[in-house]
Length: 194
Image (cartoon, rainbow, N blue to C red; front, side):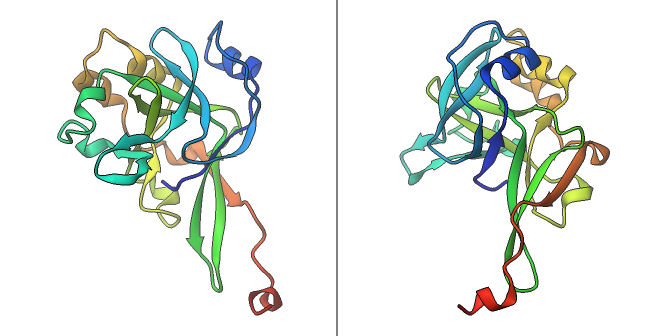
């Protein structure tokens, strides 16, 4: 997954969609970037504004993604396996190769409604869990965020389930639930050489 996503919902829309009663106010964001503070839903259905990206000692850049397949083996993520969260979004962005330039692609659910990506948090920061892509979007990128369906959202956040049980919710979204389109028009040929 690339390093951009969008949340076009207000606090009221997010709280209604995820059945959350309280939390800080926030505005929609057309492009969330690493280190931005954004709404995240934690255990007990609480909205918090957390920073995207975990601080790690071995890299100056924040760790924004975590591979689902190796979460339990990585020392960075082992302490966070029981600190699961939902990351509300309306789309995420990938760049794919076009004939002359990279093309920004907006990937969203087919209904254009808010969805939740699986995340892990250290209490102030979070990372988004990724998996191999659904076949329908494999031509765009080799990874995608875990987009949870409503039943899996409850499983992922359930504090009574250990990570092994909750991890059953991690997988690519079904092909028929996804849609995508170019987010920006490709550059005109003459603009490439300006």
